[in-house]
Image (tube, rainbow, N blue to C red; front, side):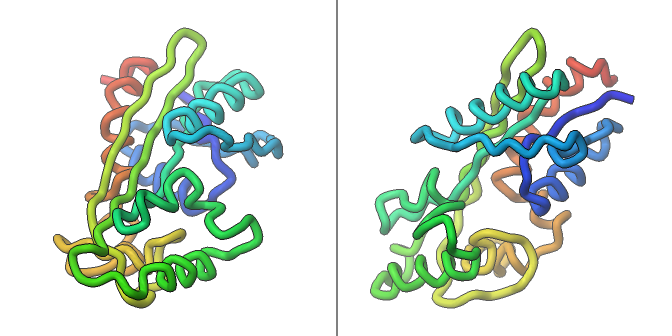
Length: 199
């Protein structure tokens, strides 16, 4: 069976990617499946460069076609913060819940449409012969409080007008239909089909 390494230690992200790519009939493995414990530091200032750092290094370590993703939340009123620092916003030791509270406190005086934000996802794919990338966006607003318990990261405070809900109240399947990650993965699917000779 064709094997694809998803270069992340984030269980929620692996679950979403596996479901989204399930129609390709690939054997999708994680870093833990290969006992790879190395954490690639996301030290660059763009989602693309951070994703490439991971896909290149984990491809080098594994020898397997490798898909990596870097994503984050850009809030207009905060000049694009937290951006590439989304997973580490406020410090490495904060939980997702703590980060949500921090962001809500920074937004406490921001009203209405000024609370606009977007999720950004950049997927990169590295094989022996090529490097490909795809990006996706999901526009929405920051709520005034956490709503919902599904998902991860900023999902409880990210309101999607077309769903009249936060991404934390959507099933994985519903989220994949509209998500930034789903859009980026959709863009990389033709490359996967070609590499794995999927008709």
